[in-house]
Image (cartoon, rainbow, N blue to C red):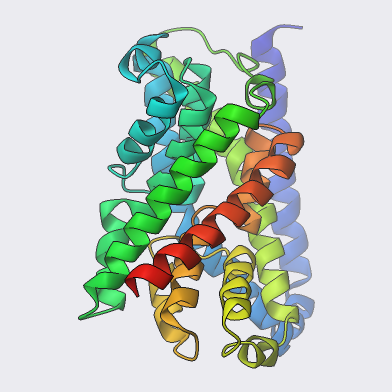
Length: 324
């Protein structure tokens, strides 16, 4: 069976599924209306839609950059640009990542494409962590969310850059690169450059978008079932407050361009705890873990997410104690 035939059949199947969903939704409209009217379901739907709407534009941006790298960047160029030694390539990649406005959702396909093109995996991971955490858009948003407090912007930049670099260095020494490259060349595209660009973007969007939906649904469910009083009870407990907001950032999965406003609203917490929320969120959350598992592998996400969480939390606590 030819590739075009398989592609056409998949497209037909996709159209059939969409039509079926529309028909079912139309017939079940009264039931859906009654269900959404319930406060818990309404909260879930609101959070889910908000996360997806926040993430999709930046996911599209990241996928566009990823497809451009796959189409126009010659193989072997990035290894020549980055320093050969991982201990130097990691901080360089982290600083380069800061120059790309985008959300954590978009940084995952870009990091994957960097690995596919031969960049050191540790450097690609540092880029993945730094790009959504300290890019200009995020820093401006932080300054707006914390008016008259430039030390918060500086602390976010330093703590996030430090965390991205440390994670990269640790992965270079102890990580298993095979967990990132196991899917390399699994979806090679051929044809003209516009064709390769469109095929790559389509594949990456369908793959990353599916896991974004799973992650957003998980985040919405957790936000719905966790009582708010649990958060208030730990606000004044020092290091426990830092850990609590780090965990909340993982659960809430707020886009990095918006998380500073959420952190600023948590006035009962210390500035260091607020910093932990902003440092951890762009680097590890439930939707990002799902994206990483789908883009690379589950084994990678199982190792990388805990490492990132520990380093990011420790970095925020250290920098916050010095600058805030």
